[in-house]
Image 1 (cartoon, rainbow, N blue to C red):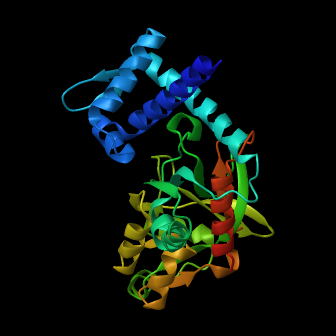
Image 2: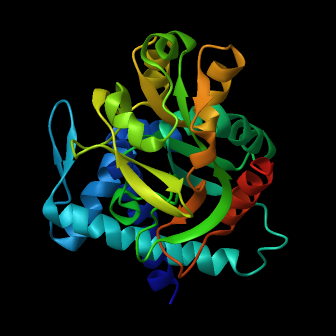
Length: 302
């Protein structure tokens, strides 16, 4: 009985180490995290591969790559370890000290400008939680990428998204006084097709902007001058007089405060964008993730 118990614990420890190595891409980094010799980590992975009779990781002098079997095993390990966390945390979550790792997917500009102060305060208040922050505006597959919590700003939630609403932000149409002096001010969204527009886009699809017009939201074609996947860069271009852009309030506010741009088409403002905490599964949310979501919701209150 004791032998079987110890074997199970060894297997769980090996699975945890394998997940760490797969995520870090380095035996040395994991050894540093665990404060053990690198040889301890490599032996543990080698023993796991021997027991499973399959190669999990392909090693080279410069990098580690998961085999197809390793990638499939990684996802199963995450599910099993999550269930172990759930069983332990569920014993007494109200009294438990939040601990463990949270991998976060954060939008670039909003993450840096609005979320970082809240996340740093959280890190100070929760010393037993390890935060891994991935900044990107690309839509991530949370399960495949092992992300515990993603913050997404959107008006277009996908079917099956598991979310908690944290707040809202407004989209503002912006141009510099110099641009408006040279090109005139559009008074209706339909007039944007006659102007130089600076488009936030992750794709090369035809550019349209949605506005509330005559009681309903309609899409209006715009003429593209510059296209980028970074809103701050586009707002800087607008401030330089290169055209009209449309950006969320958290990007626009400092430019408006400095008088570098002014807001246009205020009577046609579209519905606000939602700020959401997106989860990979609704089967179980670890206590540490719930604590972070509550903290962010409180921090984002108007």
